[in-house]
Amino acid sequence: MTKDIMLFVLFLAVLLLCAWPLGKYMARVFNYEKTCGERFFAPLENIFYKMAKVDPRTEMPWKEYCLNLIIFNALGMLSLFVLQLTQAFLPLNPQQLPNVETWHLAFNTAASFMTNTNWQAYSGETTLSYLTQMLGLTVQNFLSAATGAAVAIALIRGLGA
Image (cartoon, rainbow, N blue to C red; front, side):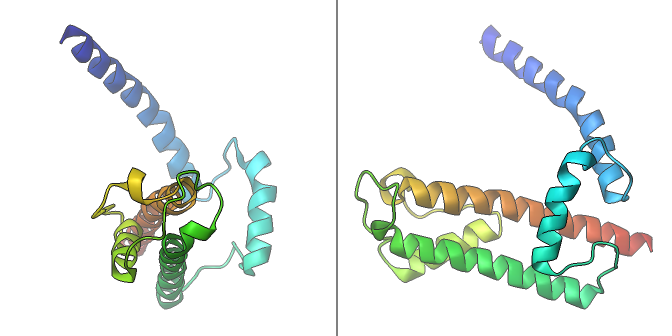
């Protein structure tokens, strides 16, 4: 019991110590200010901008932003849906797990992970291959949270304008 409390206090202390510098860093990024990682990440970021044909210096109207957000999430959901329905034929499936039983179960899981509710109607370890869990669920976990943060920043910017 004492170890649990000490671990919790340590975790809370580390969390609080990281919150201030991370918050300052995120504020600088969202306000288009120079950051310490820009020297490394800017060239990589520019490659993605060129591939997507995006000019990072121009503002995006809200309708275009909304449409792009919907397309981005739809593609992520479709990718996870297809991944679940084809996992039996893909690598990283050492247990030789079959595809997800029905299309509506795969659709439900894909929609759930796209919306960051992460609801599964089955045991993931006995139904999904390693590839589906890594490339599908984990990526969607990250992307759905990142999408939520992007929408929150866009909303804050819109209310502040």
